[in-house]
Length: 164
Image (cartoon, one colour):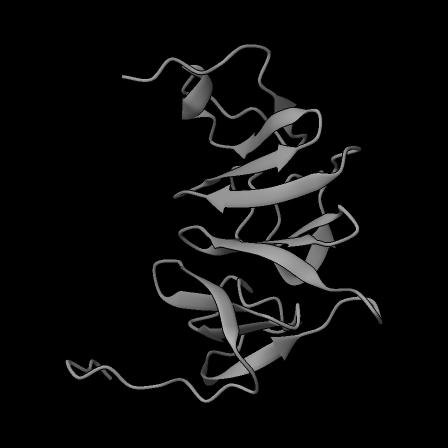
């Protein structure tokens, strides 16, 4: 239901960062826990199913693992963990999750980056990952000046992108 009056989300702890996709949101807590809420038709909440939820639900990763960054694209979500791994869930029709195949993923899957990821960002059908070795992209790769699908393996920028 639409609302014009802001409401406080019921979360345990203090939020550190938030990100919103078209109809879903993800919250990174100071503790490193991640919560997601909203539409889930593509599995973008990363909860292992395709059920929408109005209440934020905690996303599970390995025990003793904390997140350091979150991002939300149109219908996908990215999470960077403190140990440098990067995970994605949801729509993968353009390879934006950075894993082989173009199937939707209702649970978080590890991205095919063999570098320590520090931060993440997401757009409509693409993903950006800041790593020690540079900036990686996955998905519909308009950022490198091409309008074709680059596939499911993240690409490293060889040179800075042309900014218009």
